[in-house]
Image (cartoon, rainbow, N blue to C red; front, side, top):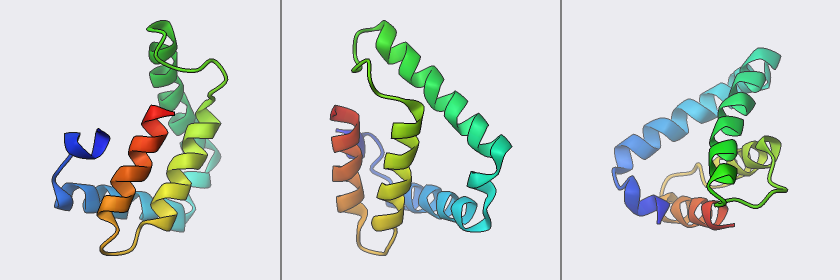
Length: 93
């Protein structure tokens, strides 16, 4: 499970805070930042497709939207376990 791979609560919270700051500041919707994020996700998806570990219809935009939704919904204190479950669901889909 993904949440078991990254058990450090503080590291998770720091990553979440950085992501929320990027979203709140508009940085994540900046065309260049969005393009770079989607390119990075595409590299990961392409590697998974090459290994036959991913459905063919999953796009970088799908993953980005899913992550944004997860981090937005569970970004409150005490929601670490839920975030882990949702990330696991995303990774297993």
